[in-house]
Image (cartoon, rainbow over all chains, first blue to last red; front, side):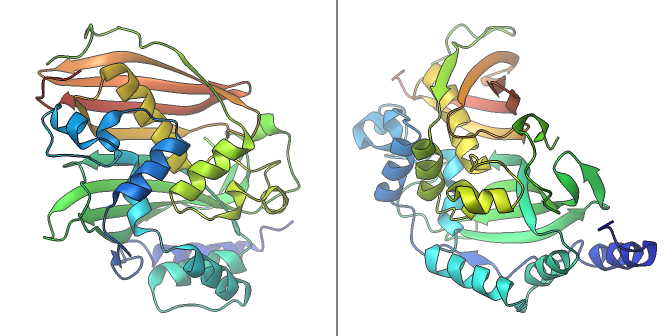
Length: 197
Length: 136
């Protein structure tokens, strides 16, 4: 049995509850402005032929000022980059904790054995389209943490992050709810049993 | 402008999307998502899945594409809510289907399903409005 004692489970639940409502990490400022090159890489990978993402004249013909960014790219602009991804994984392997709530939460879940992650839901309200030159900042809040549950992937808990993306003037661009499952990996299951819902 | 044949119940054309390893990796990297479960089969297995799988942001991108392929370029997506079911693995084909579920003034709401051989990968609700331009 990997679930630990009832007392350990109850301690974990109390610690998890303490994270609800906290700012997950300092505001994430995009490393660079929205730009045509990254938009083009994205639309080619998705084989999306909508001309408003790559052709200013085509975009103007639809009433826009010029090229716009695909809506689902919003999170891309505030990704931390490859070097930082390496650093986060190195710190995590060392058990190091950084000085913000999400790092402390991940460390708590890692130590309890909930080391794997899968995203389950995303909801995004787009207040306006992004254009090249826009500079995105995201504010992440830990909105909800479920009790530990049994799922098809294994035992785990669901986290909901609220993400507010604003532009260089501080005006709201996108409001998002992102739900993920942190779970204890089991030996690989047949694919048909992988439904997390 | 208005959208093509906008009535509740109108079906969108089906899109069959073959997904190979390159698709899953290229879309993850285009979104700056370096999580190993989206590109490293060995690490994916250590983490409890049989192979690498498509990221939620990539799925979101394919839903955008499917919807605007139908609406044409003079449409703006104002809201997406999606839920994942079975993962998309290399070698899968995702079959996207959609239906108009609501018309409210200019705004059109669609239900989109993406399914592979093992079941439903994504259930999405998408709302879009016309941009006001002349092009379709």
